[in-house]
Length: 86
Image (cartoon, rainbow, N blue to C red; front, side, top):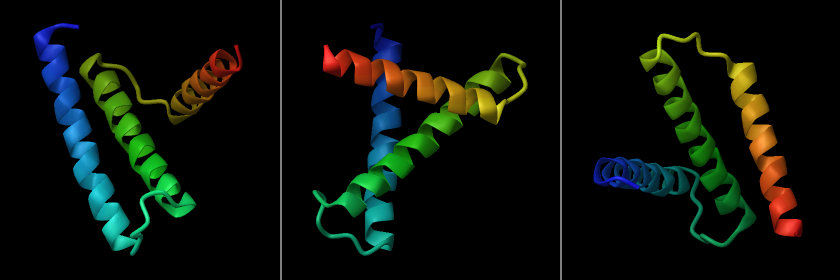
């Protein structure tokens, strides 16, 4: 992974961390190991993934397709689940 790519990834993770902390606080969640915290973290992760998907599409001059995002995310989840089973 290139240095600029590492820096970009670190910036995205830092932004997500800030958003997760804010979301947990807004929802009054204090137990970071609870199901509510898991759901909140997943919400933030999906939102960040969506924003990145939109930005990449726009930068490439492509139309943003929410259905494609859902399909790709579903395929990824299925692939990861299969990998864990093996």
